[in-house]
Image (tube, rainbow, N blue to C red; front, side, top):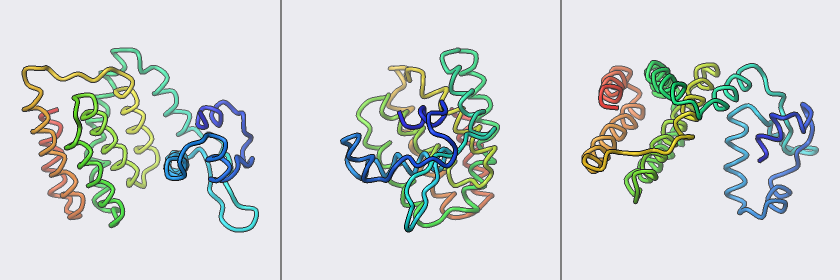
Amino acid sequence: MLDERIRNGEYAHGESIGTLESLRAETGFAYATVSEAVRLLRDRGLLEIRQGRGGGLFAVEAGPVVRMRHTLLGVADNPTAVADAIELREHLELLIDVAAARHRCDTDISELRELLAAMAAAQTDEQFIRANWALHERIALICPNEMARSVYIGTLGHMAATAPRIDDRNARKYRRERLRIHRNLVEAIASGSVAKVRNVVADHNGTE
């Protein structure tokens, strides 16, 4: 994968990786898929997009924050580490969500609502939980605090590496309740109200 090739030093800092069109031709993926992958790599500090003549996609040297996130993801198979990641994420939740409320734009809110729709449309418990994590990662990308954002997204990597399960006896109730809370969270962020975000985060962490 491109992110692994950048982290492993296959590309030097500032080296050209190509363009969206060349990556699409190389991978065979649709333009929209390649564009979204490039956007995520840019947000994660692994590549730079340069416009104009001589522009394109260029590798960025993995700084300490990126290396820290990679270390977090590298031990995701350890059950204790997963539990630690969940605890750490809960402590960071308020910081991330308050920052999102303060810095969100209309595009952010539109995309968050699309991810909520994906949660609601999930056909399986695994799809539902992974859609939940995707929503949290998108919220984190709004936060301008790179250190907090990187650690938070790294904790999500721990959980995403495990097989998500919901107790069959409570699955329907769990999904309905989690969807309600995350709708409230997105609307609190959209409102820009720190007080509303604090209330929803307390509800979120208390019923995880």
